[in-house]
Length: 352
Image (cartoon, rainbow, N blue to C red):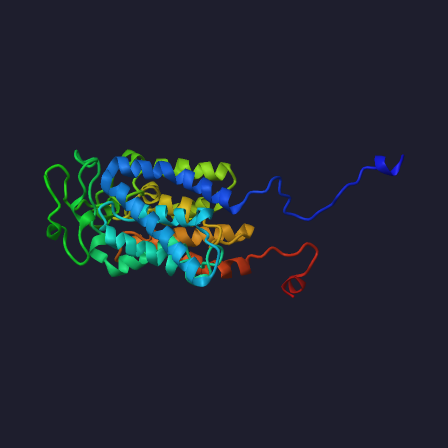
């Protein structure tokens, strides 16, 4: 057999990639997965939700461009990561959240949550949640003011608080006409009703989104399906949401069995509030989550446990945001302690 006819077998170490997937392709697909959630938000809450999404996304894009220019880095708007931050931020805010506050949240999300650490790949926490945490501390009343969806005039009239001027109430704007068309009443979320009045929303309502809540957190079924799209495309680690749901069920289940009148069922805990959105699209952020096989399970378990503890024993009705931020901070430690041992090496050799 001649040299040209000889077959050469190459032996390489993992990972064995079948095809190259760029950051831009991954981010673009995340945007695709979020678009149905945004569409449902607009359908449910109308023009206020649409403008809220546009304002947060545009603010994030402009802030990213500004900080790239100031730092001398190439403009990274084209990788779509900043668009994801803007969309996720809007979906975690009340649909009638004042637009100027939404712009502040967008600026903080990119400026403090991302650019301060060096841009994409260097942030230590999810930027959208950093922006949301800031406005929750700065504007606690606005962030907990909820408006019921499916109002008759939602496609041509704003929710009163949407156009409130800085440091002024909605009444001061003078822009609200025909207030009977959209109910300006502050609706209680399923979590608030359960925690303070022990009234549990129906499973079908939680699945379809027929409840009050943040702009993009109401329809658990739609969010789950959109997350599955990323999982099937292998652009999201399915083990993280699986660990979150499993830990949530294991902690909330015994509590419900001990006192069903006070503690809700595990299914209600998983479907209500922002847990589904957080588990599918925020906790799975590749930058701020561990990559080790055991680490992703531990990381998800931390989020699930903290969410239940904050919801049931804390003063807040929701705990997903803080649970994910704490897990983000613990991610380097989790990755460090869950590093797989080098094959054939002793534990001391693996550490050296």
